[in-house]
Length: 213
Image 1 (spheres, rainbow, N blue to C red):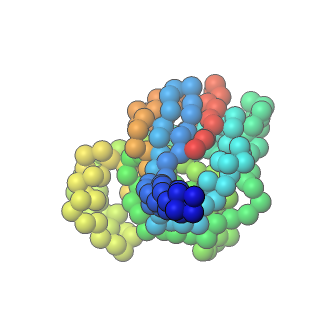
Image 2: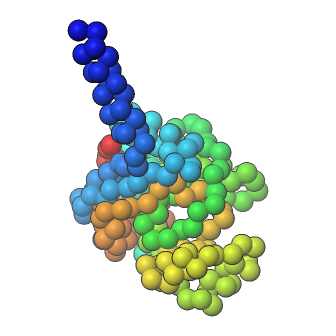
């Protein structure tokens, strides 16, 4: 019996080890379809916080409250739940910020943390809950050269090729924390980005979300 018990523990331990070592995925559910998102291990503070909020059901029925075609779609403001048509959205959160983990490019489909800009946020800390999904546009070498000169960094060949094929929003690089990417359902971003918008880039017809493991 002791041998069987020990074997069970060893097998269970191996199963846990294998599971914990793989990628972490979450699903953003919308009326336009689902997006499977991989969360990066290289941005542990943002990953841990996002998973915590998801497990709490924080994102259920929140809105994509800011949509700009050719740029990005943004959501995660708790004030957007059941918000009236004239409600001012974009300033809500869970009551805390997350330290910046900046360094990854804004390719199409990347998941990044929204934040306050300007001198009130010199450390570029992220919103505790608001995020955006990049749509962006295909870039040219000349455009990428300009962003490099402006930002004081260099893209490698693979990054350049990705910007020149699937596109993205390099104007945001080195300023906001990218902490994941859409690996399935990339077309859903295009569908959301194409909706009619009104004041403050809010969709005229609410686009609700839920995010689950």
